[in-house]
Structures are given as C-alpha cells and as structure tokens.
Image (cartoon, rainbow, N blue to C red; front, side, top):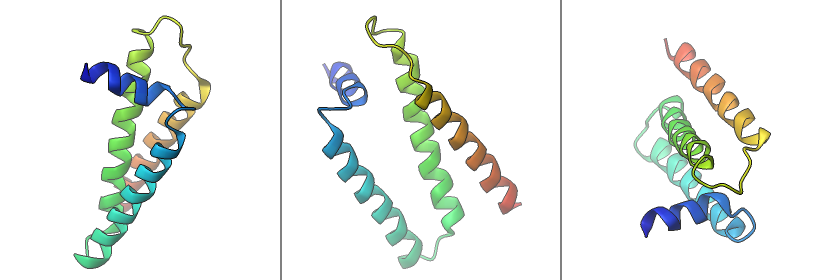
Length: 95
C-alpha cells in the first residue's frame, strides 16, 4: 500500500505538482534555517539535501522498470548527472 502511494507521488507529475513544490520550498527553508540558527556550513547542508534528492531520483529511475507504461525521461538522467557533479564539487571544495 505504501509503495503504491510513493510510486504515485513520484510518477504523477500533474496530480502532485503543487504538493511537490510546497514540500521543496519548506525543505529548503528548513535547511536555510538550520544553517543560520546553528551555524552549520551551507556546503554540508546542501550536500546532504542533494544526496536525498539523488537517492529519490535513483529510486524513481529504478522503479521505471516496475511500471510497464512509463518511459525513462532524459531530464531525470540529466538531473542525476547534475546532482552528482554538484556533490563532487561540494566535497572537492570542502577539502
């Protein structure tokens, strides 16, 4: 039951467009609040946020094989590559 709801939320771009946008805004505001209130490095916080988004994107790509009527989108692969490059840059700058 939960897996079907997660799959519906990940794949249905039209139905959950507003909910995804609101969740993303609140998530980024929480990250910025943590950075300013607890004086945590933005690089560390943004790297952890990007790792979370990368994990959800990889789960989405892996579940494309489970759904027979959904094709893998090029924008998903571009997003994964972009997040990977930014994560590499974050860890390179931190060193």
